[in-house]
Length: 138
Image 1 (cartoon, one colour):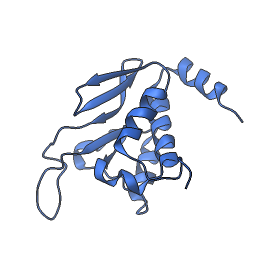
Image 2: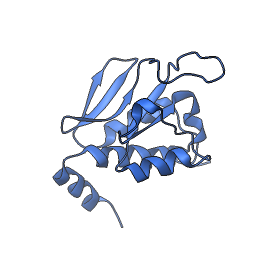
Image 3: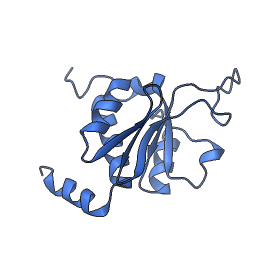
Image 4: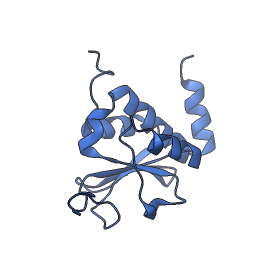
């Protein structure tokens, strides 16, 4: 199995996010956030009452939020049962999807890389996004 096809891990979120241009890391070690141009594109959430295990009622402690380009992109990810992404009513009208860190392994590292890049593109300044796209092969 190639490195890109192996199951994704939490450390991949950090590595992939910080590999994007002009990324600033904020937050703390347990709940970091990654921003570009002053806008957060990925962050690890603290437990909140809107994200909980439906069976036990316990708040999720490992939620990661990823920004998306549009509401259509959000719905495509959360409605596709083959993906681990979800949302909560708190996030209605907000262009982001949620993922439990424990479910990262349901994605390959390559799939996670695409999600991270898309999150960065959704929040990056237009010039930075254009420059990054133009620097890509193919």
